[in-house]
Length: 235
Image (tube, rainbow, N blue to C red; front, side, top):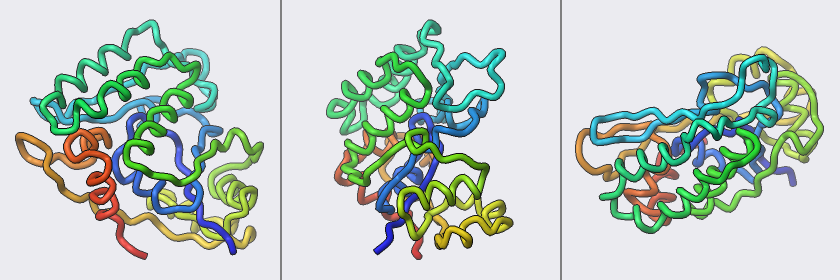
């Protein structure tokens, strides 16, 4: 019997829809073997501060490296962003019910000077999966040695890991359906439709699409997993 996989670029402190996608499938692949995109979610995300939405960005070394892959992109640790981000998160969430339970482990991951952006962001996603008890096996595309572009690459990865079904982000639908790559690989495709659930978020109006630590600090891992699953629209 075949398995269903999802394949997504590693992002910095991803939103809960990303984690819901990881949770839905039999195996998840971090797509770290594609080109790094500056000013994308690969290196930034949002938290809810006392003054509203606050963007946190990981500085990277990109000058003269236009075609570098995510797995090759180096974090600019000399910038001192790690402690700055930790302080911003502490200021935003120290009054949240589950802050004390999770912050020290999150801070340790934020301050761990990983050699690449992929190592750093995947380390944080692994922390989040552990906190929410998401047990889906996870591997990196860079470990598979598969090549290709867009739909061809995704279909080849599915074939390499023995998948019969692929759960895709809706944003990829156009180029997937313009290609016959999945049909040739005998892999069916469905799309991750997600309606953002609301949950207790402290003071002020509810802000959706924040980094998943927002849900974690306010609801904890057990209840948080129930909340993030609520947004999944079947099939």
